[in-house]
Amino acid sequence: MKILIFYHKLSERNGGPPTYLYNLRKSILKNNLSIDFLSDYLNDEKVVYSSIRNLKIKFVGGLNPNLVALYQIYKLNKRNEYNYLDKIKLDKYDIIHFHSTFDLYKYYPYLKKNYSGKIILTTHSPKAYHLEYIEDVLKTSVGKIWNNVFKKLLAIDEFAFKNADALVFPCEEALEPYFNTWKNFSEIIKNKKIGYFLTSSPEASVKKDNIQIRESLNIPNDAFVIVYAGRHNYVKGYDLLKEIAQNILENEKIKDVYFLILGKEEPICGLKNSRWIEVGWTSDPHSYISAGNLFILPNRETFFDLILIEVLSLGKLLLLSETGGNRFFSNYKDSGIFFFKKENVNDAVNKINFIASKSKLENSFLEKINFDIYNKYFLLDDFALNYLECVKKITAYD
Image 1 (cartoon, one colour):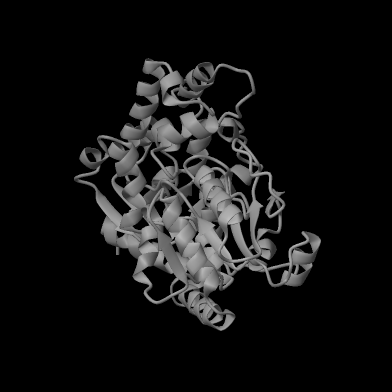
Image 2 (spheres, helix red, strand yellow):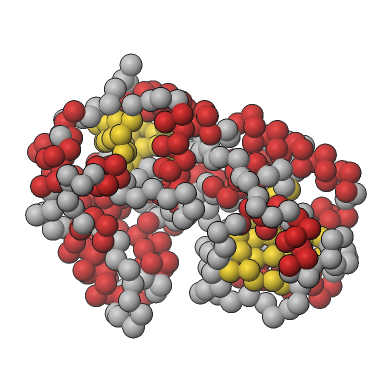
């Protein structure tokens, strides 16, 4: 069985599909499996093709987002950019696995004429991608997008899901944000073959120890530190996190609670408080996470966050909103993974006070359980093998 992973970029640190696929490729190489990546072809000097790198247009401040979206749609429908695919000889592959609805939509007409194998689709967005594109790429709202533009972006997502032969997701819970944000999603996928296999990630490593990090930020060694890492936006629940922190910092039952925030401070800004520390983007997030006592994921909607697995590999306690892929982790009973009701600030505050009130010995025991969960279920060695087993099952290849 020959497989081509169709995505244009791999990255160790950017998150989303680039990092997910970077990790998968690392596991494939370690297991000596024969699975090819489109990115390898694009890096080959013999294949000259630059347009694909510009497929996702960088938003230029001040430009009408409707015009940007129209240009994106124009690029997706441009049919004169297929020549390089002939050099890849796609028909030698039994399976082509797309990781973007936009990519599948763009290249499907070529595949229909030149390819006889099966097409698989995995999406990674924390909501239907046409909504993520509007709200998080174009940084506008559905209400400000022209109706014909919205319908076309919606149709692209719908086309991709309908024309894929099978779908692959980390777990059933990861589909929840699509059901929640896409009215007809259940109808679109009702007859689809769907395979599931857990995402894996390398064990996180730290460059600075906990004392170094805390000293550099003037955080007392005995303080209880809550860490957040990610985008500062609505779907990630960053505004909810601010409410949670405001409540705790003003009315704390546990003294010396600090919030340590990683990621670019936009579009939502943080609190103005000496115990709310915005680190910004960092190339060493794991050192900061390791220096904390509790990692929080307050998402309104979520797919299956890579950062969650990385935190487990550091053996840190977790507090997750009960939504999407987060809910899968409720399967690990009596662990150091705690939950609060989605969008419920009071419940989150109560859970934080409960966790912070535990003894160091109790929390240390729970941290050990979290590390054991990582080692049992999320090791990178198994990632490619589980992937191959899943693909075989849903495509009936032996």
